[in-house]
Image (tube, rainbow, N blue to C red):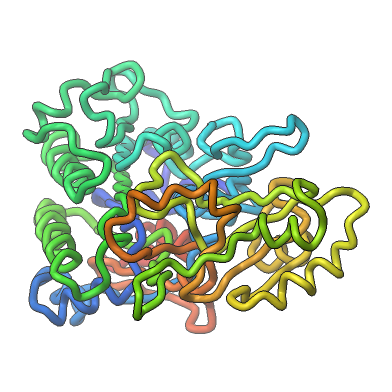
Amino acid sequence: MNSKTTAVSVNGRAYQWPERPVVVVCIDGSEPDYIEQAIAAGVMPWMQKIVSGQGSDLRADCVVPSFTNPNNISIVTGVPPAVHGICGNFYYDKANDREVMMNEPELLRTPTIFKAFQDAGAKVAIITAKDKLRRLLGNELRFGANGAICFSSEKSDQVNLDENGIDNVLDMVGMEVPSVYSAELSEFIFAAGVRLLETVRPDLMYLSTTDYIQHKFAPGSAGANSFYAMMDGYWAQLDALGAVIALTADHGMNAKHDQATGAPNIIYLQDEVDRLLSPGAARVILPITDPYVVHHGALGSYATLYLPDDADIEKLRMQLADIDGIDAVYANREGCARFELAPDRMGDLILVSSKHVVIGTTAARHDLSGLDVPLRSHGGVTEQKVPLILSRRVTRLDPSQTLRNYDIFNLALNHVAL
């Protein structure tokens, strides 16, 4: 840190320099009920202490669409997708007529909080579960000796000093490379975070998990409680090492299946639009789409629709809104204003389904063979409420303000009582 640095400004916000390490955790897919049920079951003793008065137990709204990429990037930039430009995991590049993953750093329209703090002299460490996020989170950072650290547990056997700022992660952590479909993929993150705090002691550390467990297990179940007990133990270690710990989620999670039969509740939107217009006239884009479809089948509660130039948008909007299970259909301008999205990266219509319903394209395009439990997923407004928990008490909050998950660095750096 420059001896004169007391605050760092980025994306219209000023953040105070941390007096002790700040660890921000994004618990993928963690609706508040997961933590509440685990506390009630007695398996999260550290968290019980925090929410009972040692820290701050708040709630926040995540970004909608409630998916991984737009929310992680909102958290690490402190601004909504309308500003940073990442509006989903997947989008349609209309200018080049191609559907692409939103994983490329050049798609970002703003710098990250990490970039601003590194430029001011801070040591930054980022550990994420899946490699798809790594380059976005580490955008514009300097690596190499004395640089930032940024790697994924998925590719932890491939880290190197030049690209990730660290070598020999497996030896440091003492674990093997976890399966991408496992609880261990997230546990590796916390084990590595503890070791980094013991050794490198970054000024800022960001730990972002996977929602594999939340897709498979409901709050209060044995599988969920075991996972949250594991995290609780690592958070206690980070706390004991002197860090300020701030926890939130990128989105919640809900059952998306028939309670009696376990069959997924799916609206195949491409089929509906083909029926209302003509086959292939419109293009359905599902922003949940990513390479890891085993646990959700690329099915979420949010979709965007690209229409031909001669389409009667208002008529189609009303027809789609009448479909059972569709909660809302917005024209581009209205939907982007409602959800703070970038209009040029969304379609002509934006659709949100109800709490227990997901949206697909056509049945033939969704492989559900990997679903070994009834479908649980996310994406809509019903998965917007997330935890916002800090290990210390926060002060000077405006009680009229609706907190967002991307306020977490602001709270941890500007509002924590040390």
